[in-house]
Length: 189
Image (cartoon, rainbow, N blue to C red):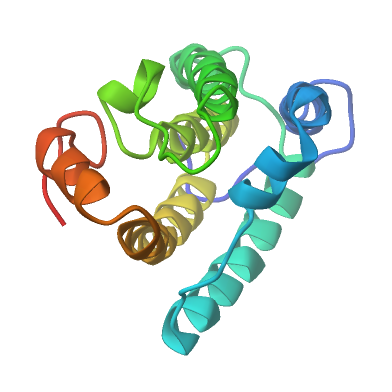
């Protein structure tokens, strides 16, 4: 791994991974009912600080995506294959989590499928996906940029959980006590 990515414009660049992600994610979102998609992007109950941090994370995400877009994939190195495995696994987790989210009846929190093991499997899938994509470039700079972005997005997750607590009450509180935030890493509120 090197610190700076090798920038290029060619067919073996990060744009390939971004294109696959956009196609799969876009297709999955298109198949979901509109009310489910609205729920995915609901920001009610957020504090101004959480909105600001989310905007900062979106800017950092954009910088990381542009960097990834023009970075050569290191297909000749082990980091590419490790990154690709993480990317594919993350994409699968994301799609399955979206399907499980969509299957929940109106007025109930998602607690089925992957949501039995993580309160935020969509975010876990996205983290794995983009960590894998940045690893595939062999650039510590892109990995570091993504890591900072992921930490900031953690505050978005806290806001989402607070909104769910306000919306679903004791049932969500019990769910928070039973199910970790990130596949066994953090329990409770």
